[in-house]
Length: 283
Image (cartoon, rainbow, N blue to C red; front, side, top):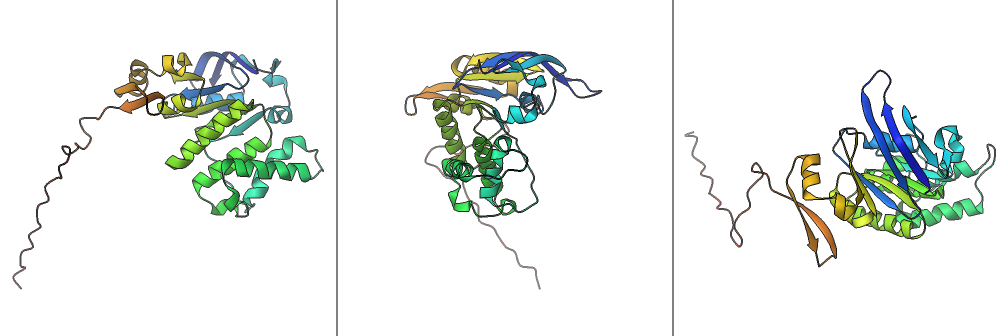
């Protein structure tokens, strides 16, 4: 196992516990999708896995070594982290921003070499942002910036990629492209942990799924066993149907309509449109 988490717990100073008793492991080429409602601690857990936050209890072992005893530069050579949001003010070009991913592999006073530039260009092409490579990062869209952050993390050449809601700022097409990239990276040997609000993402791009609820994992295992109608109802409080689609050869998740949602018109009918009558003002 490349990453092992044992009985992990975290709480902010003076605050209540965010999560506790979390244990799981990550193997080579494995993709773990963490589902759960807002504010449940998914982002906090991912930050702990990147050693940005220290656990209050339990341990995280990276390639057999306790992560708390490693230097951050050592961790950065093995773990790439892409947060939900990242604000940058200085107008670096996208190319230079992606190139910063090579920082853990460079000494304090050295500069990037030919191989570093080549690797950055390769990752820029991989995520499909070649057309904006020369644009300042503070002038591109949120979705484009999200793709640039993924490219920068990949330029680190990590063994593990941590993605905190990687599709949250992306349009539908780029969401699917990112999930395809995750699948390709796993096939090439990269291990991935990503959080998501979309149960379908678990069917699209993961080997294993964890549902986080009430400060722990309420379910963990293969997507077909974990992403069930009952578990999603318990997690999100909405009724869903899980069905196998032969067209796409996978399970899909379909939420039920709430009574408060707009009712659809009957098939092949149009809603009645009543004319607006404008009366005279009398002037």
